[in-house]
Amino acid sequence: MRRSFLIKSVAVGAAVALALTGCSNDREGTSSGDSGSGDAKGFAKDGLIGVALPSKTSENWVLAGDLFTNGLKEAGFKSDVQYAGASTTVADQQAQITAMVTKGAKVIVIGATDAAQLSTQVAAAHQAGAKVIAYDRLITNTPDVDYYIAFDNFKVGQMQGQALLDGMKAKKPTGPWTVELFSGSPDDNNAGVFFNGAMDVLKPAIDKGDVVVGSGQKDVKQTAIQGWKAEGAQSRMDSLLNSTYNGGKTLDGVLSPNDTLARAIITSVKGAGKPIPVVTGQDSEVESVKSIMAGEQYSTINKDTRKLVAETITMVKSLQAGTEPQVNDTKSYNNGSKVVPAYLLPPVIVTKATAAEAYANDPKLSALTK
Ligand code: BGC
Image (cartoon, rainbow, N blue to C red; front, side):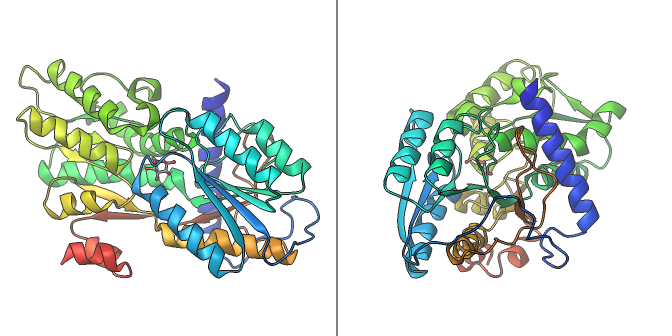
């Protein structure tokens, strides 16, 4: 109960704050002095920066690790970049953060593997005088997190919900449309935020009867894929096809929270010899961009990891200099224990029609759109 309340308040608060500021990327008029993280005293220019990332459940995490290693070095810092393992993720990450504290890290950047399981480790970090930045995923139920930096993840969900509706309408102009819903790993705070954002757009259509969830599985718990695992999504899709859709009912669309799961869902549908429905995604993974250009996956989201890492390093530099990092949201991200000052970047929806423009500044992805 507590978790769903928390996610809802975080998500709704974020939406309200963004509506008020108009644009999450607009730094003007932002508040940077009242973040409440205490006196910033700065530290040595070559101080150690710890970066604890989750397991490599999507390409963005792999890219982030490389960018942090290179970017922190370039900025003159020492760095310790770690990933949680593939199975014992929580214990791994807890141990990695503890080791960073022991080694004297000045700032610890954390992409939480389980949002609610790090309070002891971040308390120890604070005790030792380190600052804690939650990266991409909020850390919950602890006062010991200083800043949150991410793309606006509620907006990501809203964009996914809207893309699903748009894609289905483009294929079949009048409803009702039959869909299935998937969500991410329940231990990742973002999973509920994405789902709530999508439902913010889809629920009115579901309530009106324009969109029908074929299986009736509309709850985030029924739709969750533990560990963001492709095989989990593929097997849930297999069983939906073998039950709800084995009598010839048409599946028009699937809400998928990210690209890894989207491709697994498409593999399942193809394996069953059925036409590919409209499938959403997120992360702009290479294979998904190829799939979009080939007319299979319908959409993805561009959350440019290069920008997110660069902004995080800018935050670290401010902390090193003893100044408050710039934030653009000091109201929305209540983690259950405090309101965490946040810096949010705007996500971009991408379909085949918009891919060339969306990736114009990304040589690797833009090459796929030619
Ligand atoms: C990230 C997504 C990613 C997912 C699985 C989420 O927390 O925000 O970009 O697809 O984790 O790795």
